[in-house]
Image (cartoon, rainbow, N blue to C red; front, top):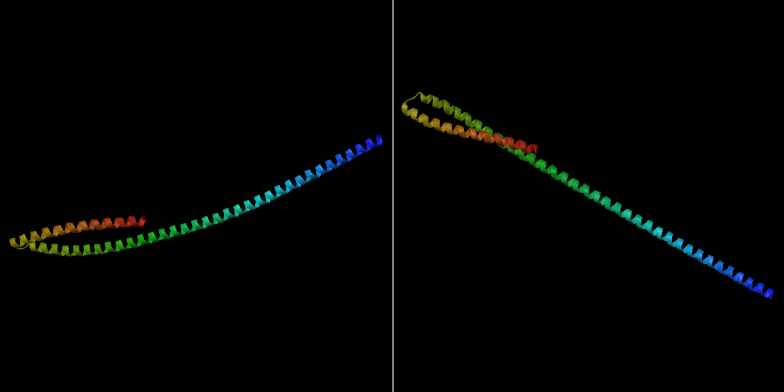
Length: 165
């Protein structure tokens, strides 16, 4: 009986040892599977992050290119606008110079007519009446020329302002 009991205890001990070994193997397998899953998840995560980073860099490059294009367009428009303003200012200056020359020419004519009028003052009463009429006309014309000069001066100032803006 002792031998049989020893044999039964030995079998129990062997079964317990076999069960413990099987349990350790199962836990090791579970641990290995879990480790593989974690490594696979980390690899997928790294790959996803890398793709996102590449996409963000690509988007950033495109935004930089778009901004560079917009800046070039704005600078081009500003240069065109400045060139247009300069051309307009030059044109206005030429018009003003032409009007000034015309005014000076009229002043010369006016001065000659005034000299003629002064000669006429020395003439008879009838001639004197004619002189007064002519003088009045010349005075009005002189006032008109002065107003035209003022207008030209204002236009010159406006052209200067255009050039500065």
